[in-house]
Amino acid sequence: MTALPLSLPLPLDPAAALPVSLGDPRLDTPAMLVDLDIAEANIAGMAAFAQRAGLQLRPHVKTHKSVAMARRQLDAGAVGLCVATVSEAEVLACAGGADVTLAYPVVGARKLSRLAKVCQGVPVTLVADSAAVIDGYGEVARRAGRRLAVLIEVDTGMRRVGAPPHAVPELAMQVCKSAGLDFGGILTHAGHAHDANGQLGIEQVARQEAAVMGDVRADLEQAGHEVRVVSAGSSLTARYLTAADGITEIRPGTYIYNDLRTLACWSCTPEEIAVTMLATVVSTGDSGARVTVDAGSKTLTTTTDPAYGHGHLTGRPDATVTRLSEEHGVLTVTGPPPSVGDLVRILPVHVCVWTDLQPEVYGLRRGEIVERIRVDAFRHSL
Image: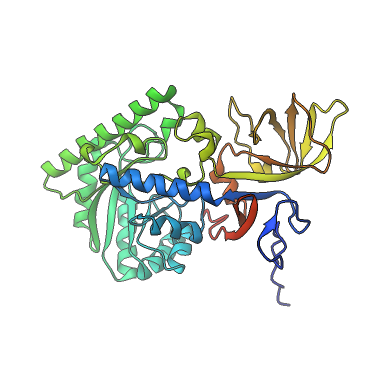
């Protein structure tokens, strides 16, 4: 017996014609909302910075996972896109996306087989930090029937992936000796900027990021390698980098939407947070100090912040999400409480994870939903 295809429930009735107001009964909750005016201003702002700084912009799609939003970034001047997984690359390739950097060492026969098919269709730059990964890419190039560029990832302090700086020239040599592979340059991610102490600490992380990459580039050039790409710069560190540092491209991701973590790290302003989660109050305590909404850990994620908890209501720092279960979020409210049935909007702590849980999000202009935005790569972690 053939299984019937499952129809994924969506917050907004698929038959609803746009625009739709937030109070429309055809809109269910929880629903993720994107203020398009803010998101587009964020896109334009980073593109303008990259141009002033002499840097190419290759946004990381992990924050929006959407072909529609990627096209906005490309139209604003991005030279290509950055993805984290093979399945994200498959989605962008099927959409006729620009050239893609897969900024993750790909390991495993099934992933490499799928990657070869992607590389047959669109230009893909790969990233490696070990000899074993480079060996696997040689087979990908053979199956794809084309030469592939490889960047060596450098560990500039995050201690997650990346080769130590002194090991990079040897790995670059292995790429050059591998059939079907071309050494393209170096890449890093200074994600430890989130743990830095204050804005000065984040700038210090960025300067260290630039210094290490500059030293590695010099070592590679001394060894006779051409270093075409020096890729660095997250949403936190990118604006502290310029072409004068020897950096050629930046790969920020969160900047398109921003969140409370980005705000806490001085990398956006409150009016640059483009996303909220629309939720409904489903229960209140006798005193109103406890308010429960229909957005729990399966929507808001378990990410927490010492200052913001799991998030707070827009314009209501006195209404903080302090506890989550799977389907419920519990707010501690010190001011006037909302009532059962009220709609509230919650600011994100970590917006990238929010997006990964949504098949569709909703673009707003002037408080009305005017666009359905498919999250084409939601739950694409393979």
